[in-house]
Length: 571
Image 1 (cartoon, rainbow, N blue to C red):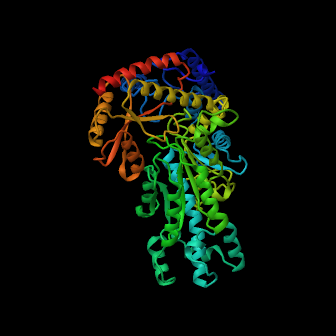
Image 2: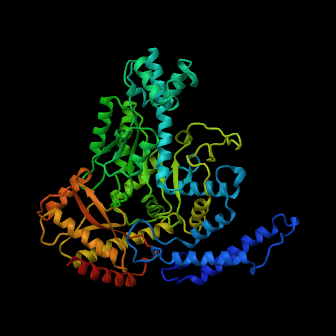
Image 3: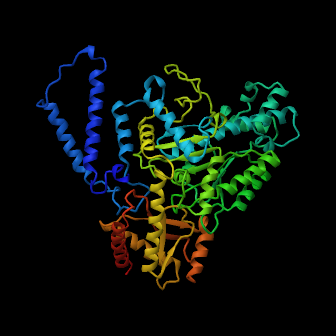
């Protein structure tokens, strides 16, 4: 089945693609020809017109430059989280491009709206959300999806904190601001009913509505205390989108609190508890906690199941409700590997992915392991309560009261292309998001990654892999006879530089800082009885995600060539 889904690294499936492409063009042109045919045809000059020559010359220049593009479709590309795209995803994307709908409003997109709702439901089912109450929409990528989570978590926190301020100001509660700011929607509505509180009463106590300066004055003058800046708890190896979110949403960067990592590069659960208690002690409400299932550096997966238990304990036993967001931009599609079949993930990692179904919100990037064209991210939540956000109006656009459908008023991006929705829907129809379809592709990548690592281990006695590689990323360094971490880093840097200069393979490097990865680095250096005389560990990083991994013989030939090149570059 795989043969009919991808073009092939050498265009092996070109005849099928030509047929599909011809069909796509004919359907597109036929649709235009038949739409309002009674209007008649415009008089347009033929291909001999000078304007056509200008277009053809421009296209020729375009393809001359395009020939320089990085061949990420090849099995030799082992660099970043990008690979070939599937033919169904390509067709879904391009067909929507021809129509060019805008998901900002139903008025500008009928089919696109339908594709988005259906595709989001399909993704929700894959990660374990119930389809009926789940909500979400497509974004331009993981960063915007993470921003969507912050926007909604802030909306919830602002409501609860505004209620907390009102109750404290009026003497209606003996609880402190931290406890009341995590009260939950049931308690929120009970307080509103018991004390006859209108939303307008909360507006003047809202830090979102009043802004940081006015709300600081209110807390200082009326409540006789400083405004309790909400914080976001993130893993120590946080993605760059989280500091960005602090900048965009007017939160102090000091409000992004890192949680320590263990020696495998995963969130240390006891450190999370310590962070929550620190926030309680200092009186900083927790806007959200972030877990990661598939870090960009190493492919590590946080123990979402254990973190869920911690947050459940606070919620059920202490009445402290904390939003849990999972950044599954890279790894989320691995949920398909155990839907209706057997996964190649280890037991701990599979449990972590299974537990994603219990969190509040999730970020996915179909343009990574979904083999969908850029740019395509997705944001999903469990229910309406989690999808709710500040209401914004525009006089020239139709307001959509149905929260089932995301519009310009409920998404950070206004105009949104339907290309991602079309690509995800069509590719998931052809290649189901379970172990029989898409999950089989990803299971193959896990098997290929393990085989590649074994071959490297057999070929180089001094190779050291980073622990915590839970998905399909390999990261390593070669130690040789060196003890000095600084000299080993210099050697690794030289190896990557030589790969960059070579046309044969593409790899990347990643730097693991002592600040974030101290446990891991100390554990690794201890293995080779080394000396930590640098502030980071530099490793060669390879992402084994290409869809052409089922041919073991062909892959072994490439691995042989890679090993030969690595040996040469290491001398």
